[in-house]
Amino acid sequence: MFGGLVAAPINSPHLRKSGGRAIVSHLADELGNGVEDGHLHPIEVNGLKSASTPMVTVAIAPSPMLLWRFKVLLFLLWAFICSKIGWHSVMRMSVDLRDLFLYEAFLYYNPLLLVTTMVWLWGINLWVFSQSNVNYAKIFDLDQNHLTHREIWKDFNMFDIRVAKCATWMTIIVPTSMTAYLYLYSHGEVLLAASQPVLLYFAVVMILIFPFDIFYFSSRYYLLRTLWRIVLPLQAISFSDFFLADILTSMAKVFSDLERSVCRMVHRQVATIAWFEADSVCGSHSIAIPLVLVLPYLFRFFQCLRQYKDSGERSTLLNALKYSTAVPVIFLSALKYHVLPDSWINFYRPLWLLSSVLNSLYSFYWDVTRDWDLSGFTSIFKFNKSQLCSHLLHGRIWVYIWVIGSNLILRCTWTYKLSAHLRHNYLTVFTIGALEIFRRFQWIFFRVENEWNKMNSRKKVPAPQPPI
Image 1 (cartoon, one colour):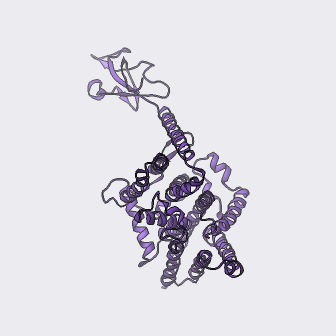
Image 2: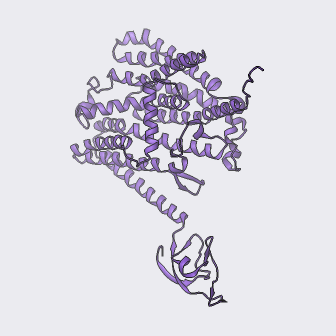
Image 3: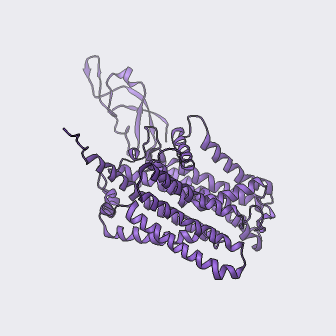
């Protein structure tokens, strides 16, 4: 049916069926101008024009829609198999062990699942930028080999967008490794189960630092170079530097889970009784957790100081103050496990609540008044070609209400999640982490648009004329 060889006249109406396309071999040499722009025409033989034409060999290729449906079917089948195997594996465990085991499994796989979600949403951001008048490549100072939305997305005909290749593979590989981890442990293969997250993390690191020109080398190099500039802001801060640093603050919990996961792998605590030891070197009371949580905020804080040194703008100091308000939230919360209960209830918890409210409101104020420009709040959704998304979002008052309201609520919930109170409630932590990534996904639209508007306004301002 697909890809088979058939013999038919060139002008046969059966050559081009609905959903398929004809592929003709060697017609240019044998038949002259018999193929033009994908359509077949009668040819002249021995000086005479004839409606009947020679027989040629053609191949009928499958339509993109059929291939897409086949891939979706395979994906749904894979999702069903993973869900079924994972469910039966969990049900094989005792009730007492089940919650602790799932907590550890989420500890290893929660960071990569959230990163996968971020990649999917970033693909949507790039697609919207490409549909509107926002030149994101110029904003981020990307070269021609950067990872565009067309490389991130594959054909997805239902929405006329491209599904992310990177996110698709991450969506398949991470849950597959997690399913193998659950299955092997529930069937007594503890050593093999412990190797699953180790192999997954090793593969991710190797792909990220692979020095050869494959796996989107230019994009990987751009990411690593930007991360290096964030860690060591030794030169002038570019938009991409503090833009990525802002995203890292939304993924602070991801980094703390990564630290504990790597710590357990290094100390060979994966799938061991060390789960029960909260005070162990890699336990939930480790002092390394708040230290890792605070790192993205410190990076952004020092970026603001560097910007003040370069530009002299006092607003950068106010921005630095905003990031510094996250430090007491994190460390006051961590004291819960290191002070007496009465001291925590009567003294440290009120301080923690006060610092949480201050950080949430300050961050919300900065988002709305500085990072975004409310005068052009929804112009980014005015697409070059009219689409349903553009019609629903452009110039709608409910977009103002939704984005501002959800940003305030999610700012508060994210600040609460930085605390130690929810550390063992892995489902709640995962949900709030996903909501924070969604908040950052919304923030990206208007932050990038605001930067694009600033770039355009600077172009329109005429340069001062020298005195005559």
